[in-house]
Structures are given as C-alpha cells and as structure tokens.
Figure 1 (cartoon, helix red, strand yellow):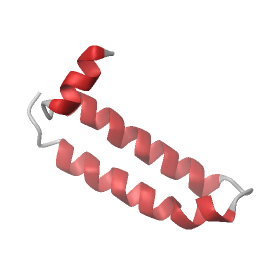
Figure 2 (cartoon, one colour; figure 1 turned 45 degrees about the vertical axis):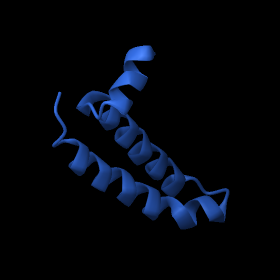
Figure 3 (cartoon, one colour; figure 1 turned 120 degrees about the horizontal axis):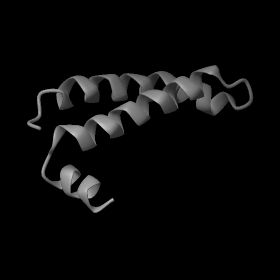
Length: 62
C-alpha cells in the first residue's frame, strides 16, 4: 500500500489511473442505482471527472 501512496505523491501513472478508474466505476454505479436521487443527480459529474482525469493521467510518466 505504501507504493500506491508514493505513486500518488510523485504523480505516477499507475496509481492515478487506479483512482480515475474507481471514479468511473463509482459514477456508473451512481447512474444505475434506482434508490437515491441525489446519487443519480451527481453521477454524470463523477463519471465526467473520472474520464477527464483518466485522459490527463495517461500522459503522466510510468
């Protein structure tokens, strides 16, 4: 776990891609759940943030 946080601090691609992928997955979950309207309301913002973050992070160094 230490390597993960070290990658976040030093702007390494692998760690940040994992965070961006988790945001995308959370956004999809928020979009597809039928129970809470507030989650559905913010799902597009979370999904868009994760997608843009993944595009930006893919230009970081390994």
